[in-house]
Image 1: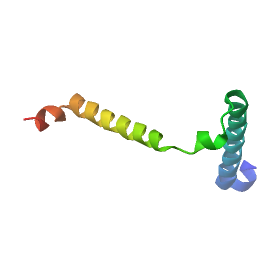
Image 2: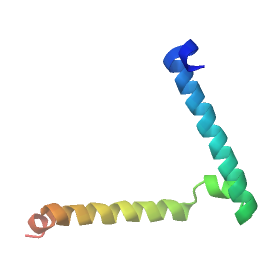
Image 3: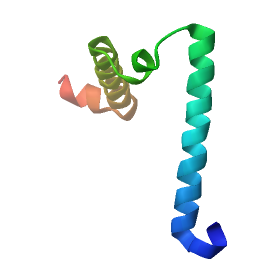
Amino acid sequence: MIPRFGIMGAVQATTISYSAACLVLLTAFYFEARISPLEVLVPKLEDLVYFVDLVRRLIQSGRKLIGFDAVATR
């Protein structure tokens, strides 16, 4: 597929293989955990809150690491 169709064939082959792997893993996860795929794939409000808090903490620790925190508190 790749030599005949060039870079677009590579894109299609990669997309198909990654999609198939995701489907296999999601199916295996469902049978192991008994959690609906929608519960796994659709983020909830608490997920958003967690990631916003995580980004804020990472930004704060980055500012302290490079010295911006000391300048801002003066």
